[in-house]
Image 1: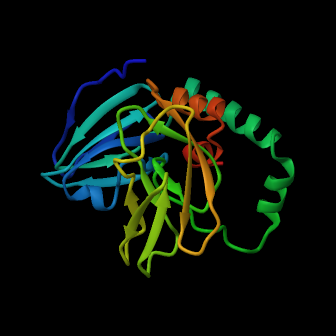
Image 2: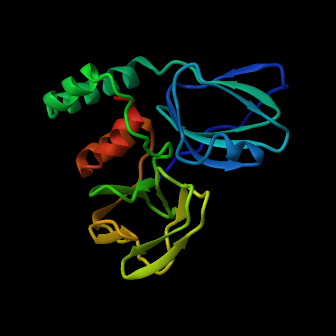
Image 3: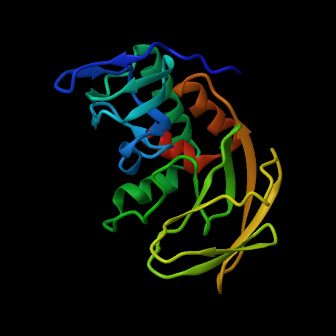
Length: 224
């Protein structure tokens, strides 16, 4: 499915530019990448300050569009169609895990750390990982203080101290349906099934995650 680019929106630094609802960042240029990385989900009402060198490409319920700094960018409210579709998807997800959802709501403990980018995979986890076609994802760990070594697809990759993310190795092919084994030093292996996806808007991306069984990414995307 082809992505449709919408017009470029440019404003003065003091102006607020409304968006079309919850969005996924699909490309970043400039210093803003440090605070709003690719794969970030911008919820309704999120305010982003873009400098003169900053540019974001977003996927929302209207398709894709680009915003260029300098400007003050405010994430708007989703359209009624998109809001209804996301509510339906959330309800369907909760129906499949009633016990997990109840325990999560009643537990006094904070949830464990998880990746903030849709395109980062927690190397401790076994499951389905949706990868955007034409893009190389990253690997993620929640305890980045010490150096480590990750074995993935038979390749040993050094993981520098202080780095939470590790680029997906070029030597490990991203093939739809393939299963990749990965493990950190001294840890048990995780098995990851890759699913390649492409979506024209925010809702269709959520549907692709649901259909492909990419539950961690679905939960991050729709905020469940």
